Length: 514
Image (tube, rainbow, N blue to C red):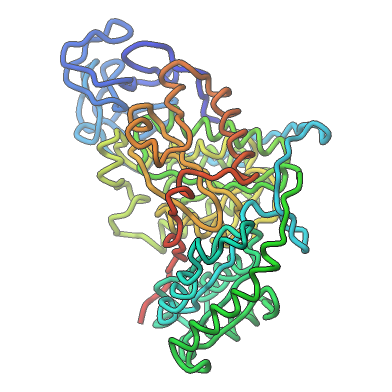
């Protein structure tokens, strides 16, 4: 298990583990600067980047949090800047140690558990928001879905103050794809997960008529039933674009009075399911926002809630730290099966994250390769036991810390988590990501104070206080946990105030387009 300090000691650099051979620059370090431990900087090092804590021989592992994040591609002198110019991504054998570090969660006594003001649906689901959704089966009906949703402006919804909005969930596939097998199954279970989501008071499904993802097949395979809460339309049967838009608008109008009748009541925090995301990561992600969010998730799990870690390419290299915490060998092996599918079937020979290459923004922020990025990314899930592993968009039934197989691309990953039941998203960022994900509110966590101050209109929480010395990791985790409770009770996030989230429904297209 990765050890995380409560608060980094003050000074120009940060040592994350006694056995590390690199330090992290707290701020911009100039050539010749005196560093901790009597070191002298041999070059200019940007904030969040790495400095050799001692001489490192060629081929020696580079260690951060005492975890291998790469190998020296040349001899590196003490005090030298360490990045992709002198360290390289290289595969190495890892011990999965299934269940070795498994420890049951110490649950908080039920009478002492946190609560929030949620919306209880007739079927027992608990919502954090109250939308009506309009889904398209295929790209060809996407414009109609958007036009139906766009009709319901704030002015037209003013008499329905308990309805958060009408939102379109359109996508770019549904035809020109395999008719059977996992690609179609994945699309349909994603759509069903949204149609049945607790945060939707009702839904419309709009098809074209000749597409491969037929409305009737979708309903039958996903056991969906049309009725007062779920309306379906086929454009070729309705008489075309204008008539389908009119029919869709009329259907939403008929649903609004009932949707508006909801009230919030006090419910246990066990009804909260958090989708964990990170984007625009930097060298501080593994020091501030990600472990702080992990501390919040440890709290949530102790209160009976659920945390969904995802982005399979962004745990690669540290997956052994998760399998060691798995509640059973079977759960651990499910995770490794997904890793192997990515490596052996999905991405061989391609220039993707899981094969070592991270984005230019990650590189600029201090992350040299996927091993280093994964080190921070995996921390979002906390330190508790791994209870289950799910495929993309599968319904998440297991409480506690779980994993869902998704890509690292944030809209695709969050779409899978929401389809699985996430009713709130927590999104850490170091470079600054502008993201929303209706119908689930998205809380943005900044890794550092300068970025937070620069992008305050988008950032909800500044985790840079850990770096600044004003907060311990646990204090920040508690602050995040309390913010989640307020958000789930109806407090608007920055992304909601900005109106973000109308275009982030992106189901994973894993199949052949033909």
